[in-house]
Amino acid sequence: MTFLSSIIISLLLSPSVVEGKFPLTRLPQNSNTRKAKYLSEVLNKAKPLRKLDEDEEEVDLSGYSLKYEKCQLIKQWSSDEDGDNNNGGDGDYDDILSLNKFAVFRLCPSDGYSSCNSNYGEYIIDLEDYLLATTNYFLEKQEDMCDYCDEICNADDDAVADDSVDCDSCVDECDKIENMEDNGYLEASNYIECVQLEQDNDDDGDDQPVYYGAATCSTDGSKIKIGVYQDENCAYVNTNLSVDDYLQGFKLSHALLKNVYSGSNIPCSSYDEDGDEEENEACQELYEDAAKCESYNGFAGTDYYSANQAANEEVVCDFISQIKKGTYDASSGEIVLQGNGKVVGGGSSASGGQKFALTVLVLGTIGLAVYAASIHSSLTQGAKADLSKQGGQMA
Image (cartoon, rainbow, N blue to C red; front, side, top):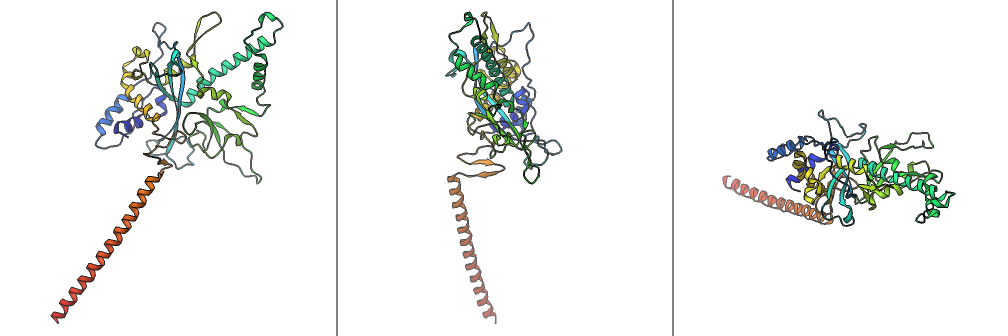
């Protein structure tokens, strides 16, 4: 990883980055401090793009659609000025790394949504913010669908019939949604934000560990799921536990959440029954809050750039690029080393090649030590013999 990349990551690994605020990050004191200080000063002056006044023109997102790219966990060193752990836990954990959760997404031209290889913008934002905005969009669509299904399929007047509506299908689907809990399911989107999971005491009456549920990433970041966390701020995910084991006999329904990452199109504008264009609030909301990489990809809204955004863009683009290249393990947030080795909990798991090289190095070191001992023994014995001869002559 280049020096610039490492500085970019250290500067951007903060939850406030997704709000458009780039904090001054504590930097290592070394020969590159002057360069690091310059970058931090640039980011420290950055401010989030504000909402425009009514007499100003907003960025036109009507021709774009939201497209999910990746879910990414990143572990970041976190402590306050006094050195106390400030990673969101209750002090019961020795790990000084906090877990940040991000979503990377694009605004793609709606007419080229499937490929999205030009004239797009690329963005990174807090995972919870992304999920809340997008799942709310699909929830509203679901409610509208069921309302329309009820209106058409239960109408007494044939004049309101709509041949495009499959009543058997939509009635069945909406009935399942309405009676989800009766069928033993809970909506997964209710666990996007950190929520305590209910647990029973064991047979001995001892209290069980308290766990929490919140959104997390799949192994490769292509999917989003609900994970089990060990602290009330959901900073420590336990990948060995399944959330379904802590839902009092219920299971999670991921149908709504799956829409977010499965490639479902989220247009930034649509038309109502009267043909009037309506703005999708989710698009504008996410656009305003996200860190942006636009001019490099030909996004048409770059004419709106503020000086702050222009100064930050190279840093943001490089940070997103590092995430997409696999600098971090998506499901743990650990930094991935070269090859197949990766940092795990402060330790390291090595690849086969690394293990072989280490073995050769150890054996070589042992061999050299034995050889050095042999030479030392020979020299010592020779010196004693010479001293013996000298002593005899003196006698």
